Each structure stands twice: as C-alpha cells, then as structure tokens.
Amino acid sequence: MFVTNKHLDRRAVLRGMGAALALPFLDAMAPAFAQLRSNAAKPNVRLGFIYVPNGIIASGWTPAAEGAGFEFNTTMKALEPFREQTLVLSGLAQINGRSFGDGGGDHARAGASWLTGVHPKKTEGADLRAGISADQVAAGHLGAQTQFASLEIGVEAPSLAGGCDSGYSCAYTNTISWRSPTTPNPMEVSPRVLFERLFGDGDSTDAASRMQAFQEQRSILDFVGGAVNRLESKLGTGDRRKLGEYLEAIRDVERRIQKAEEQNASMTMPAMERPMSAPEDFVGHARLMLDLMVIAYQADLTRVASLMLAREASNRSYREIGIADGHHNCTHHQGDPDKIGKTMRINAHHVEQLAYLVNKMKSTPDGDGTLLDHSMLLYGSSLADGNQHTHTDLPVALVGGGCGKLKGGRHIRYASETPLNNLLLAMLDKAGVQTEKLGDSTGELEHLSGI
Image 1 (cartoon, rainbow, N blue to C red):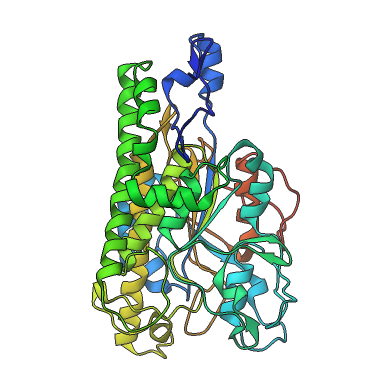
Image 2 (image 1 turned 135 degrees about the vertical axis):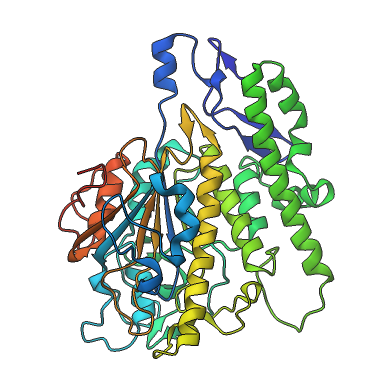
C-alpha cells in the first residue's frame, strides 16, 4: 500500500469515502539503515502562539526571584509540573500597542500588534493595516512541507463587523494572525468545521455528499477502517500501539463534538446565533480545540498554529469557576479587591488550559521524544495591566524544548521595553526561519538556550 524500500512514507495518508487520515510519525517511516533512520526521524519544530485578552495581573503572575530558583505565583501554579520546560520572560513590551496620538483603542491595538509589532491603522472600514504576523512568517517558510501552512483557532465567536473599540475595526480584536499588512486571518471557532478541515478529503469536490456521509456514519474512522487494518498488518508492535493511541485520540474528539452537537440541538435557548457545534462551556470548547491542535501537530498536518482563548476586550463570564461578571469589566477594577480577585481567578483558569495543552503534548510521542520536546509555545497577552491598558512588562511564558534549543526552568528579566518582537525573531530563527527583522524588532532575544 505505502511500503517502499522497507519503510512507510512520512506523508502516508489513509483515504476512504471522502475522508483522509494523516498518520503520526511511526518507526516504520524510517529506513532500516541507521544513518538514514536518524535523518528520517529528525524532529520538526512546531510553533504555537496562544493569546489571552485583557492583560494579566502582575502580582499573580510575575515571579519575585529571577533565574532557576523562582517560585510560581498563584496564576501560574498549573504550570509548576512543567517547570523544566517553562521560561518566564519579564520586561518585554509591545510598544506599538500604545496610542501614538490615536486616542482610545488599546484593546484593538493589543490584538493587532501582539505578533506583528506594528501600530495598526485606526479605521472602522475596510482599509485595515497592521503588519504580517510571526505565525504567518513561519507559515510562509514551513508551510510547503505540510498540508496546512498554519491553523488559526479561536474559542469565542468573533464580534460583528464594524467598530469594536474606540474607532477601530472589529477585525483588530477578532484575530492575532495577519497574512499580510492588509489581510487578517479569521480564527476558526467551530470544532466540527476544524475537524472536517483536517480530515475531509481534499480530492472530493462534492461537499454536500461528504457532509451527508459524515452525518450518517459520524466517525471518520468508519471510512478508513479497511485501510487502517491493512496498515496495521504491516506494522510492528510499537507502531501498532502508537497508531492505536492516535486513532483513539481522534475518536475521543469526535465523541465530544457529537455530544456537544446533541446538547446544543436539544437545548431550549432564546433566538440567537452561536458558534456551530461548540460546547456551551468554556473548558469543553477550549479543550476540544486544543486536542485538535495536538492531533494536527502529531500528524504533521501543520507546524504552525495560533489560538485565542478569547478575543481581545472579551467580556465573557466564567460561571464554571463561579464568576458571573464579565472578564473585561473585572479588569477595570480601579483597585477594588473583589474585582482584582476575580480577574486573578480568570487568569489562572486560562493558564490551566495552557497546562492541559502542555501535558497533552508532553504525553504524545514524536520521533525520539515528545511533541513538547519539539515545540515552542508562546503564551501571553499584549496588555499587561488591563486596568491601566499598559503595553510594557507583558506577561510572557515560553514552553517547550524547541528541539533542544530552549533551556527552561528559569525566570529571565530583560531590560525594560525590550521589544517582544525580539523574542518572536528568536523563535523563528530556532525554527529554521531566517528573517532579519519583524515589526519593531532590534535583534534576537538572548539567553533562551542558557546563559
């Protein structure tokens, strides 16, 4: 079927009835000869950019000590089990989020500048302008090697078109990914749509019949079952185990999407529009999207993903942790201890979703290590203080091994107002993407691999 010269093609895909299933890296994909096996198994760096809105309260985030002896504060406690894979970086700034005479609109500028380092044009019309974002620079270099150059994922429905923040278009708050200075990428918020994008067969032109087949039989594994059985007969014990775990992860995601659809279909709600096939609760929705992100990395469908846990200026409430107040409202606390406490609980809740992703990637084999060993996950916000709308000393965590190019377990403080884009430039370089400048970068950030 796919076996040539005693090894399986790394791009092997199982097809059947309008579905396509990419495979994780298996031992059978490396030739028997040791040197060739080493080359074939060379890990690929995955890049992830994970954004949270409205800033993070520094007293719950920033460690008091620098270096390896730091303690995780309350907001970051969920990352403590992954200390050795975590870098906490202080002193970085996204200066182009400031007004520079444009007045209000810090939330819009925060979203538009986080991965670009470019001051966005103030407009509510179609004449948008920001800058190409770091994820899309990476996609332009790495995308030729994968089915999808990049994935853009969200966990909250976008705002309506028009203005969302003091004369700025909603496009600036709805995304962190810019394909070009004038083209923002939409964030996909539907687990069903994302799943079918990843596993629908690109060779099929009849979308209606493919959708009908999915709705009738539900599982992609039903379509490719014969191909899976034929492949398994050619694999060793270890590869059969890896393949089984991968298939079970896909089936688990399908079950959860289907359950969400069933609940949404039977729920009596006032007339309103809402994301298709997404769970009502934040955690269920976020973890479905994170699991799909891991599967896409595992099968090498993409090596670049950006994800917004909520859109900028989000006023979502988090009733699952007992907070009915809107997030944005809480961040404008004006010193109110109750609102500060609620904001810190929301901040910690977001970090718990990051920890879920990190644990999932640490538990997923990839070549001679794990997905986490071979990834760089940037987590943070382009606002520091959501009450004052400051863009300096941003909350920044970098998690993963970067194929041996990152040394975690440290809190590093840089000079005040060091451009965040210096970090983005360094991440790109460590992923094999050479670019001399990105936005307001002044050079690559140092010390990520050790001092």
